[in-house]
Length: 78
Figure 1 (cartoon, rainbow, N blue to C red):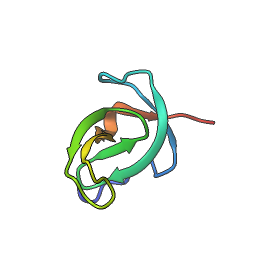
Figure 2 (cartoon, helix red, strand yellow):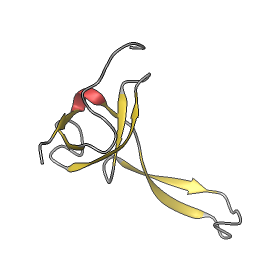
Figure 3 (tube, helix red, strand yellow):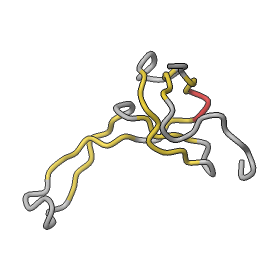
């Protein structure tokens, strides 16, 4: 997968065509070319625990977008 070109780029609007979030649309936040995955805004959210730090003194949980295989998204024309 190292030298594969993808038609989906950062900033494109895509629709999820497979998986739990099927039918949702969102903007591509990042393309992970080596793994063949994309991060889509607001899709495939996972609740992650975070340690206390200067930014979050009490710690807690955040919702974070997880990667989706690039074959499970389709580019949407605006």
